[in-house]
Length: 223
Image (tube, rainbow, N blue to C red; front, top):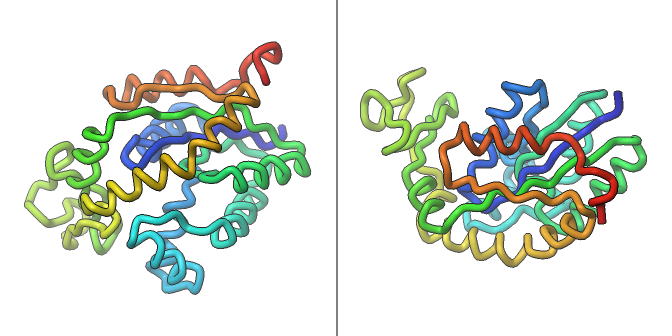
């Protein structure tokens, strides 16, 4: 079985990681998050992590040359598998490179699914997010509050707000997303594999809609 993948596109706070987790738990797909990989590299103090941190902390996109190599290494190490790409590719150049690498491997990109959500919902989701400094567990001051304020339920570590979850940084990230991703959305639309899902609704409903889109569209609808 060749490598297969779907892409989840969406602004920061659209729920890409959450929905990817739900879909993978139900389907056997593998959640592929460049964001998680980069954060791990930052925590480890790896050179690529230190470079990426400078961009992430000011709400800018990490350059392609810091992402592509780790992405392709991860794909190759996984063998024949099905992936949900969460937040990758983010630019038209990345999309074209991914297509070229997939073509070399006889892999299939089935869908690019755009998770759409209002700016107000994004701000509520992200400004309330808290992450354990020790184990990396995620909480939310409103949606998933810890049992004790500021303390991780799992390991007792301190919870913190990531720099990229500050309101000013979020607004900048949304602007960057709109500027950088418009061409990417148009690209996948032209290929006939773009689908849109409203992710402002409850996660189960959003995940269910995404799971209906795992297979490629009929050949006659491809552009």
